[in-house]
Image (cartoon, rainbow, N blue to C red; front, side):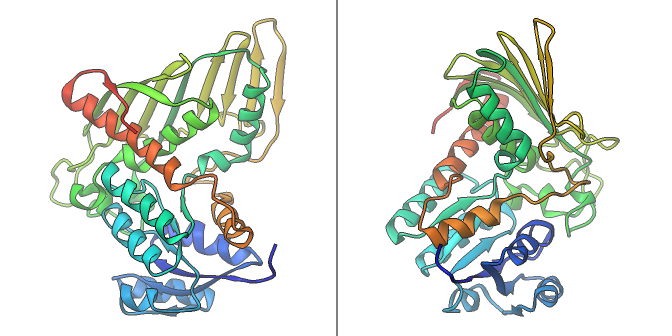
Length: 349
């Protein structure tokens, strides 16, 4: 590895920048936060003060800083594609938050721009880098529970208005023009990425109910994006299962995955002491104490900035590339189409 420091600029100074990207870049000996832009200047100023960075007054000013080698795009979803493409064309590597774009067309433009410019593009799907999930994939591939037949995976909490910097019902997460999609973009897309990676198989067909059941905005009106989704997925390898995403799990967060195989089952994230548990049909059981599945209440290092920095310094393609982000997004979009049409929908990648 080259002995150099990767200098970062930030688009966005919200919660994901504060609690993941900035602190993890700072903790990495090869990373440094140099400059920040946020249209809400006081947010940028606060974050910059924590890391000895400077605040800039515009997107253009940030991209014009020559010493910045990489950009973190941590903005509302509607800006992901535009800012990623601009940063890549300015000669910067880009770490973009999920969902990577608000359409497959934009996602493909992002990928094409990365290829054209020769710059790295990584998407912030952190679930697959959590130690319990890495261990689970190894065990599944080793045949620990036999052939996978079915699964259920869920991600739910009390809603982004409880933890985002836009604290309250006015949050951009609740506005379709800024977020594009609600709980399926915030939480469901994590699980679409996770399940295809865990099972090493693509999602071919989906059936879904995606709806707004309870969340209201500052006008006491139902929000314009979904707050609950229940989806059925069929994988290319024949396995099928359920994916649930919700912003109305106010009493307790749910970030649990269960995999059912021909020899037994595996539970991920239910037991904080042993986040990987196996129960076999012959009565044998095994528990693995391997890290933790991150939650809003318990933040653990995501590994996303660390891998991104390594890929830049070692000139390697990120494992969670733009192509991987597009596949996760494609499943979400298929679920939206299924819900709207009331039909089973094939995923178009």
